[in-house]
Image (cartoon, rainbow, N blue to C red):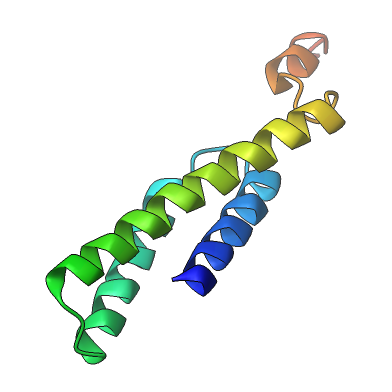
Length: 93
């Protein structure tokens, strides 16, 4: 469980620094399916499988939010609104 927790936080932080949009739903769905298959193959009970999935999903979101907040604090210009830059250009007909 500790390895799962550490990997979830690291994956979430990687996603939080790399992606600007919500990528968590597809990653949580794919990770939950993989964890369910692994737990079933190892002969785990339903409660162990659900615990692993909940742990994975919650720590993935925690890592994502922490990394996104860090990116926002460390690089405020990088996270600036992209529409503001587009509005200042004049379009030639």
